Image (cartoon, rainbow, N blue to C red; front, side, top):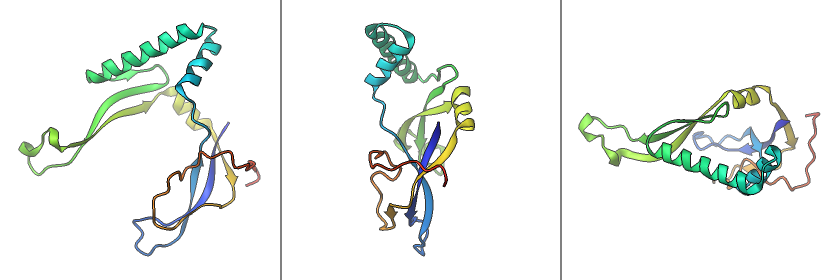
Length: 157
């Protein structure tokens, strides 16, 4: 198992000289849909698909209800989910209110299982330079995800 990347040519917006740089961008596989997760979980656990659906739907309900109450939720060695916000800084205390909050978010802190995965996983280059992000616009999918382009992993890079 390895994390795959490709090299892309890019001009960063903060660089006023518009110097071309080369950067590694991750290449992702297909999206594992929730239905596929449920099916694979049922197969691994040896339970009926309906039972697995009930358990996973119940887990999601527990997560949302507790996050809504402001609680952090620990999912074993997988990690911790906790509600959070992003807010604009103000010059004085009286100016801070709900209007200064510009983003609500769920913060995720990886647990032991994911930290071990990241520590142990290798990184492999999958393709030569084939993407140009130098036109100054934001790319729609700079990380990949289009793995059906017939490229073969070359471990010699």
